[in-house]
Image 1 (cartoon, rainbow, N blue to C red):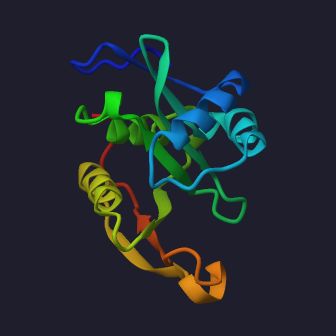
Image 2 (spheres, rainbow, N blue to C red):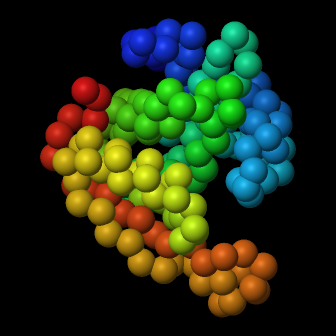
Image 3 (cartoon, rainbow, N blue to C red):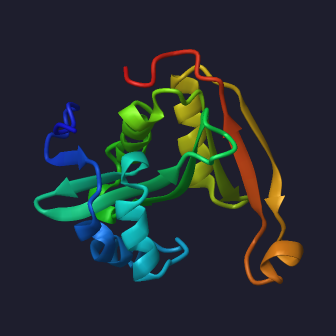
Length: 173
């Protein structure tokens, strides 16, 4: 990928590499209330799933990262696992630019839908994904997917599956 072409030229978007695994782990720690993963999990996100992820750098620092994958049972769908934007990268539309970079990438050439899970109170994530849906001319549906008691043993709020699609407008633009 080439440097981001928006007016914020200081942030570069690129595919992740395994060298980003530890950096991603530290970034997530700095972005509460994101759920942390093990460093090993982050290494897999940055290597096995690199083609469906995106790293954002500013002055050599990792300031944003989105991990995702294409579920084997849904080759037309990109599932966004986690969105992390450090406070240094906020207020610039970085998260949506990263979503568009993933959905517009070569690995997603056959993708027409996007899914993610979000807790009911995560207003920033709801706004991000609804804004992305508007930009790509897509419908949004959601329903409770992972329940607080049944799936998290009461230790995590329920997660709602948000589905966007089909995209009716170009992802980049």
